[in-house]
Length: 218
Length: 173
Image (cartoon, rainbow over all chains, first blue to last red; front, side, top):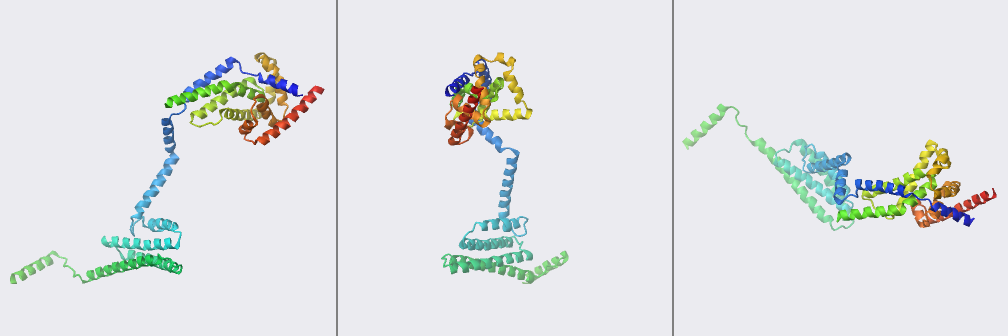
């Protein structure tokens, strides 16, 4: 059987293309090779750019860019602004997720209190600290203060050396908070004590005249 | 420099064509039993491989890659035939008198082996062609078909047993 099988195999090995068939395909191949050259480094770079400019990728890039842009804009927003909820409910919450240990959590909660105070200061400077905004900040402040205190107690229980540092930071914030509130109260009193200016022009002229008379008399 | 490198790849590819065109053609011919179609599949194998290379893709073993492409094309060919129910027509065409004139003496002589291979279980046909006619190593066959070397050895062993039975039966007739 082996001999016969080998003979058959040898015959099969004689199956070949004719010279004409072989050169015909080779010519087709050469024509194709001229059409589809192996890309140069520049072509590959261009193809990569084309890939990046596909609509789907443009949309994703725009989405990421707008997300990053919104986050930046929200970061500088103040209470009452359109993007302020994004700052407190999304950006700060997300940052909080990356605080893994109790110490990191306490430090971040303390930082959030400081951020609320910074907002209060800015609004106060701009004279935009309305009653409702003050109340909202107050509530936030109390919530974070309780949270920090709870975390500090936990850290103290674990004899964490950084507990004292965070506690001092919280105390400073409370002091600043008190100072801002006092300033606000003082402003209120100033307003109450200020006499109302006469509204009419005639009345203003009368006052001017009286002042002149007084000067002359002196 | 860049153009020089590109030119070298083209030359290497044409050299690979000169060396492997007959092997790929023979492999396709023995499996699909249609000389002209086998020539077309061989041509398509090289064209597809060049397009792949021209896209900047790298090929570790060109010979193995060519066999992989050819094998896939043969599988597609079988699928098409199954859909069109052309198998019988093709067989008639090969044995038909008109086609006889076009074939060389060697191809007529090889008809015995084509019949023998066709009488094998389909899963043994390609390993027998690759091992005994294309003279590929077991490792190369395993790489092309995506199987283990052990699997290929077992298949070859079973294929030879089947060949023995067929040839023994033919002798008795």
